[in-house]
Image (cartoon, rainbow, N blue to C red; front, side, top):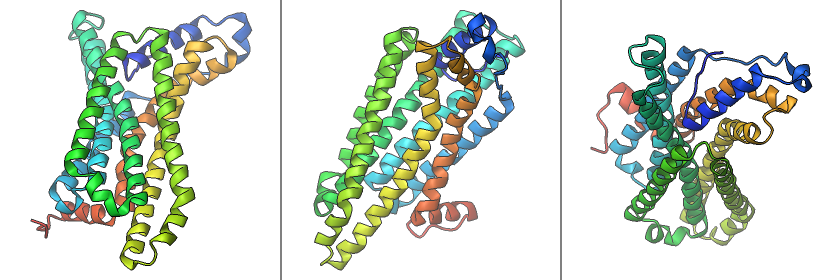
Length: 319
């Protein structure tokens, strides 16, 4: 079975998964037909490259269009950077896998290979943590936009948004380093899964509260037509971010479940069957970086217009 990993945690999980498949006990013989699904490196590389280019285009579009220099799009750029890191880590992994292991230009298990692998692991974990916290701060921004619309620009300024992102990424970087160093510890897996669950619960609570009270709040400000229009725009943005959250869950939840299963029921027959689709779970993570920019473009007319201007080489009206 070919090793194909995306992070230090993933490498550990797959090594243990391979050991399980090669040394199945008699109690798990009834699932011996659960063959491991291996996705070719070329497919991973292609998906990762597309994800990098798409998210880079988002960053360029937001940077060039002054109409998009709002806290919401600053937070969306943070999510795009997270997606790029995930795709870039996979691209680098494929390149170094070829250099170290296939062409054998350098030792596959030497100190240099381990250092490179640690860097890639850090980028991957940083991508996941960055995505979780970016989605969380986007949800908080939508909450303030809807329920504190008249004071939003005083509460959420550009400087404050940048400061929030600075704190978030500093925390993610520190956590990523700790997870790489202690990736073999059970406590790391538990903490990682708990953080993932806690942040998702936080986002879901905000969204449920927004949708339940959004309509009644809109009635209170409906006397001002401009506010009513703005309210509809804000709710549209909330729907967009709900779609982003749904895609994130579909793409990352299987990986988190994989972590829990390999840690707590590595020899259960049903767990073994689930572990056999490890590479499919990895491909879903890469797809997340590809799908997110499509959601931005589909739901944001301003961003979609900016993309068209970039592709068609039109002279931007905002310059």
